[in-house]
Length: 426
Image (cartoon, rainbow, N blue to C red; front, side, top):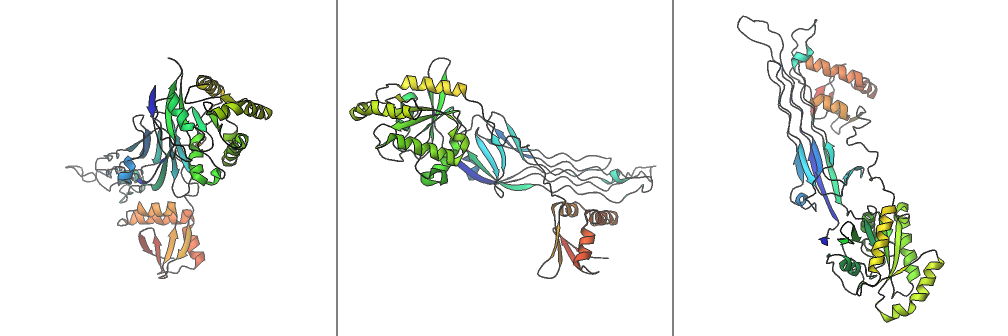
């Protein structure tokens, strides 16, 4: 037997990819070659930011000490058409079971459930073009180049969720932790009062040399758990990953059938898929005389609603072997569920990247906001006239020029695009 314990772990970090290296304006200058032509090389690509599953990790605690991560920038190009060096990607290692979401939109970016699985969080900026790329038959000595693409950045939220074959569920004080400790070497905190378990625990039960089960002891679910009562919503999310459920019924409860219905109602209200998971129902605490005395009535009551319960006692071991055997069968018959990010590509560029809006700042300066136009401004060499003219063509192509005219921009007005302030010339 082996032991494994894990808790709900959540962190928020800021990641930034590497900026692309700048392209350069350079002309070949050698003895006896007075007009060698443009040979400025491209900049290197910035490094990506990736998350990769490391099976040796069991928590997200390293990210509590450091919250900001930056991949390496690409280096500038050089003469003789030399391309700059690409920035090294930044690989952040996370434990298996890490759910990744965009902190701003709460959009799921990935569900990392298998060893060595990799997720690209931020793409590195592409390198800027050198002036050798702009040479044409009509412009054989272009004095323009392109700066590297800016880095991509975002806040992400990572949440570690349990991965288990079977989730042990039930109302508080049903004996879930006692059962887990009886079938594995896990040592959860146990006491005779509700909510002893404040964090999920994992245990591995080995039935024979070839068969084992990973079980998760899910803290007790009470009425309103799907809305967060008793921290229920936090723990219900762990049940999504399990293949089957062991529903433990407290044999000493006033109305065990009502407890059974309550827990299943909370599952259905939180996520209908949870209510469809196979359940092995067991009445606990059969070592107590009062429970033994009422067993026949409980058995009949559950059978009347289509459920065949098992009688178990974690203290004496009664029925535990049969319970584990039924759980193994339920797991083997369960249909695998797709991960929560099924159908999502690793990286999705914004569909409205070319969109922009025109407004005015309090000081009267026109302000143009938009991802594509701000990046174009950031990648422009303003000291070269050809590069500025190229940016003006971009303004026309994206519709910014006509939008400013319609908004009432006049010659001599100042226009801010990203960090740059320009003078408008109609």
